[in-house]
Amino acid sequence: MKPIADLFLTFGRIGAFTFGGGYAMISLLDHECVEKKGWITSDELMDVTVIAESTPGPIAINCATYTGYKVAGMAGAIAATVGIVLPSFLLLFLISRFFEDILAVEMISKAFRGIRIAVALLIIQAAIKMIKKMRKKSPHRNMQTFIVLFFFAITLIMNLIGVQISTIFFILGSGLVGFFLFRGTKGEKKGRENL
Image (tube, rainbow, N blue to C red; front, side, top):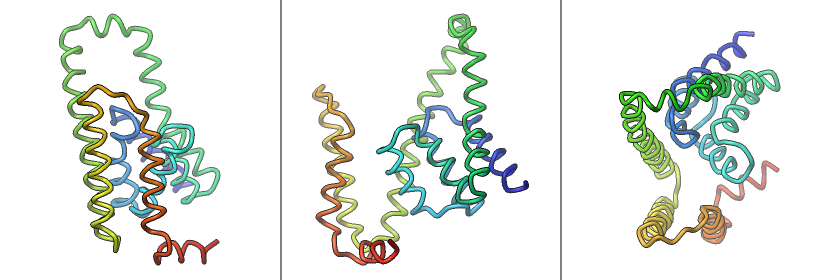
């Protein structure tokens, strides 16, 4: 029962104190699950993030479910998932009843503007951490850095000129580039051996 309770409380804490959704949670997930608890590796967190982008559901919930399952099977998956969802659900349930009244209070309205800045910084911090870890472990770090910067530049240019394009195309594009650049490398051969 101890690992299950630990999963529930850890993910409950992440869910309760993170604003801004899944991307903002990545930094906290990395700190709690990788650095502090050692439940998953940084590579697994990156893989879960990529898979979560391709599957239904928020990143944080998918990561909680995967981590919980790895640590304590199906019971762990349920405990971690409920833990990360419950605080947000309860908070939104309470806020939804009084949302207009809450935003009418000038101090709270200003606080939410400040929180938006913090959310943006959390997302940037998570991205920088993932890029640093990717660069340390990969023999193709220069090419991976180029791919990151290339797609970042395209996204920035599109936003500046006002062209809306789905991030799905960026994910598919970087996946195709990665497939052609890194096929036949040690990582892929190792992956095939494990199948």
